[in-house]
Image (cartoon, rainbow, N blue to C red; front, side):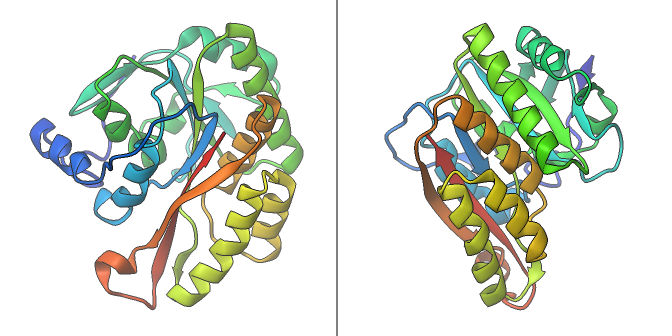
Length: 267
């Protein structure tokens, strides 16, 4: 099955030339390193591209990116794994790492469903691909979306992902796709996002999950980020670094209704 781009020409430029140029302006000179996991935004590139570019500029391209994102569409299962096929964007195509996807499914088949429906129109993972394609190297993906899962289920999914990575021996980076606070005044966004970011930097999935819920932080990808943290800890992560934080007001000039964007790497 080939998954065609759903948001080309909307969230990012729809032509190869335009998209390459758009991504190029967001990449920065930086030393690349092995990264176990990362938090990266998924808004339109004009808003969040600078944060995403700063993150991907630091990542030494692995064999496979495991992409964890929120399910905005409501289609599919509570955790939906697309286990085979190819994803296309204007600047490249990405084969799904079927062996790794199968291992993840087998490790948590009671929790994770093989399901392509959730991915057909979902933008949170697709918006990562222009930056991955920019490296120009062959890389595979494993796409997984999350909808309404508990903290225990995030932990189980994270452990399953980590176990599958260890079993296959793949060089993997786990991208947790998330924007931060949505449509609140910038001062409030920075405060609330700071609370969530503190727990991510402390490699504290429990604190992140509970803080987002108790403080009503409108962080759309807290479930993927929580899961990524559990997986990263299992894979030996010891530290995290905030690469860049920004809000939509940097582009729009509207400081009363902002969306926050955080770029973080976990090593």
